[in-house]
Structure formats: C-alpha cells, structure tokens
Length: 465
Image (cartoon, rainbow, N blue to C red):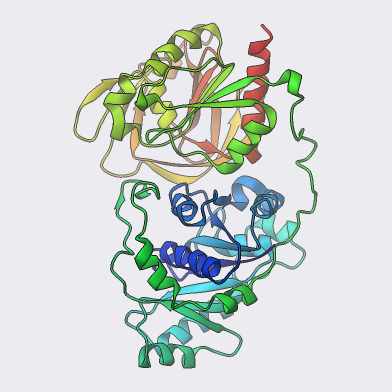
C-alpha cells in the first residue's frame, strides 16, 4: 500500500474537507483509497468512514508506538492511504502530524488556506519544507525509524478560485513541491461543531454534490503518484501477545454502541473480536444488557442523552451485576454513566448507574485535553500492577467524588486504579476510579496499550467462576 499525509499549516485550514475531497477524487479516478487520522481523534474519522465506506484508522505514535502505527496503517483495505493530520504539521507535544509521516515514511501534502493569498502560498510551502530539517520529532520516532524524514511533496490550495488565482499559486510553488489541486469556496462543505469538535459523520454528513464538486478540482493521478509505500513494522507481531483466542475459550464482551457511547477505535473493536465474542447493545434505544462476561462502555455524548441513559434498562442490570464481580470498563462517557449522577450544561441532574461514587457535572470549557500515561497501582480488570498504559483525554465534565480518597476503606469502598504520569485524570494525580471489578477512567486507552487484552482475561476468569 502507498500513502501520504495531508498536513495543515495550522488548525482550522480545512484538512477534514480536503481529506474527504481527496478520498472522493481518488475513488472517482478508479483508485481504492483508505482513510486514516493522525492523532487520537474519534470525530474526523467518522467523516472519513462516511465517504470511504470503511473504518478510518487512528494513527498515534504516542499511544501505539511506531510499529503499532505501521501495523494499523497497513491493515487498512485499499491501495492508497490518505492520512488526515492533526493541528498544524509540526504542532504537538507527545506526537504530531510530522511524527506520523516520519513513522510511516510517506510524504506530506500540505493543505494551505489560499483564500487571501497567491504567491504567499509558495512561500508558506517552502517554509514548511525547509523547517523539516529543524523539526523536533519525538524520541521514540527518532529511535525506531532509520532515517526519519518529513518531505513536503505537494500542496492542496483550500478556498482557491480558478483562473489567475489558481495559476498564480501554481507558478509560485518552489521546485520539488507539486500543485495537486484546489478546494474551491463551495456551499455545503461546512461541518457544524459543538463541544469536543465537529458533529459526527453520521449526524452531519457533507453534501455529496458539494464534495463531488470539490473533488473535481483535485488531480487524483498526481495525488496517487505522490504516494509512497507505507513502511513495514520492525517486528511483525505484537510483542508476543496472542493473535486470537481458541474457539473453546472465548468469553463474551458486551460493547455499548449508540449516540451516547460511540468513541471506540476500530483497532479496539478488532482486538476484542480477536480474543472474545463481541455483542453490542444500544442503551439509549432501550436495549437490555446482553448475556456477557464483561462490559465496555466507550466514550461519547451521554450528556446529550442523559434522560435516556438514566432510563436505560441495560445500566440498571449492569448496576445489579457489577457487585457480582462482572468486569466493567467505562471510558470518559462510560465513567460518567457509571457514576451516581450527571448534571448537564442546562443544569438538569439525572441519576446514573451508581456503580462508582461521585457526581459528574458538565462545564462551559474543556477540563482536560492531552495525551495520557497511566501507571497501574495494583492488579485490576484492565491492567496489572506497575503496567503503564497510554491514551488520551478530552472532556468538558468534572467528577466530584462522594468523599475524599483518604476516607475510603480500600477493602470495601472505591479507590483509584492508576497514578497519572501525564495528563489530568479524575483529580489531577489519579485516574481509574474502581469498585468491585469495575473501573472508570477519563482516559481513552488504545488497544495497543494492552488494556483490552486484560479486560478479556478478566472476562474469561469471570466466565470460569
């Protein structure tokens, strides 16, 4: 598989729309494009999936490591991988779009807002290419890649008109940087946003007609020609972890999947399916909790569906089964649903499952946005003592515990499963509020962390009881 990364000059320059138009242009020209996203985002990939009609891979060197990123990228079905970048090309502390391009050893196509520029687009492209020699790539990328490079090979001009405007941009580009087309100002390409980012792809898909019009101004053959082979992992396996469980020893894991619980990486679903029988349920649609040996409540938007979550028979059953030792993992939105109450931005308070103590309140601005590293305090349903797991957090809610941790009896009451070595967690120092065999984190952990392998091990132990 060949590929390239669409890197922006900054956040907000239209990378998502350019990615969607690129996918459409390649498909219309007879190629078989696959989509991916640099960084930990859940939302942009939902728009990719709506256009590509296949899951979009999440590529994050902090969470997955270089080999994990390469394996994830190469698992996509298609002949041309289109990776949407995060923020600006070189922006980020734990990882960056540039780090992703270097890890995959593929070139960068720079997305430039050309609405008010012409020759300056050339200057911008030249500056971004020359800055590559000074880019401070993450240490793990430098160590794992023989010759890490960031090659700016082409430009897509966002908001560019035709005629003199397009010709001026093309002529201004320096030697070695190809003009690959433009996304003209077009009605119907706007994606509405809210807290946590854009609306999801299923909620607010981009107009087919507008996307087709934008794609018509991109040079699909030139884009495919820019793409280079995606690097193979240094080690083909997952460091000794089993590829799949035998058929006679597969527990059942129930995964919540609806508008309230929708932030789940494709790699996580695939890893669970490798090791367990996976059944899904939709709490806000009134589904009951399926027969299962463990439960996973992903993140999402429970605050937008708080009344339905509160009335969910699945959460009522979960609250009854958790004290029996049923392993349960809730991440962000899942943590919120497992807590005692949830107060929405409108000030309405709804009772939640009450498996974990504490009240959750939505705030006007985000409370955490970062890559995360957690260290397990003791053996638990998603980690063994001393293990470090990486992920990310992005939430507008705060969690108030029912009483200070110092007053909790560790033999009977909830406690924390993790110390936070990077990030905020629940209280700035700790994450993973846990009781029985239930753990709720603000962190979203990737399958590469091993958290879901441990969840399946806990499910198998519960099934054997």
